[in-house]
Image (cartoon, rainbow, N blue to C red; front, side, top):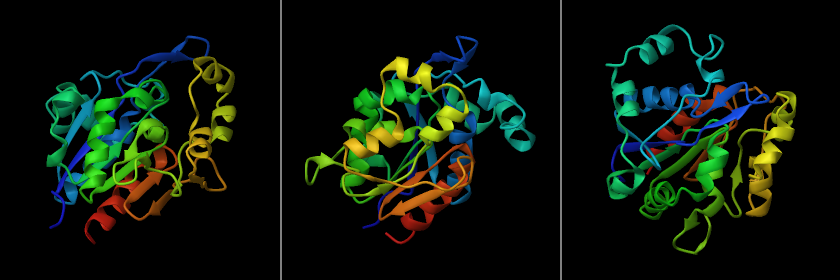
Length: 239
């Protein structure tokens, strides 16, 4: 029997500052909004949840280069379905993972902080995977894999698999590598290496790029959020 045509988009509940304390990082809005739109259009019922039920928008994700047009209108409309679900998210502990056939970890730099220990979000993803569903992530979303197991083997879910995520080169290009290192949190490439995954990336750090490895689908950066979701839908439709 095919998994439920219902998706959960995970959202970081962490908040931190970057650029010498001048800017705030939280959830990168388009990384949740774009998959929400893609999944809804594909006939999924879509919910959002964070570990604590709260969120903070990432400052960069609200800038015109990243949030404009219909996306901006949806964000500004607090009565839109997306905003209603984002602003009224449940705690992951209160979510029944058995209802979902697809898990998508949105991100933002803040995800590096809470995702590795977000045990309730991880439990939902583990359950989706164990019941034959899709697990996906984008950008810094692979931080969720830090303690996420394949229950059939009790090994890291991404061990032996190919993934992508935000490049260390991009962190350096943004001029924030030193600050991120002060957080003492694993970057995506380091996490992949530690857990025995093969890390792949496009030539350009801002290219739209995603990797499909069976039921595991990952995207490299904010520009990849929609294509990653579309790939997840394509694989889901073959289950």
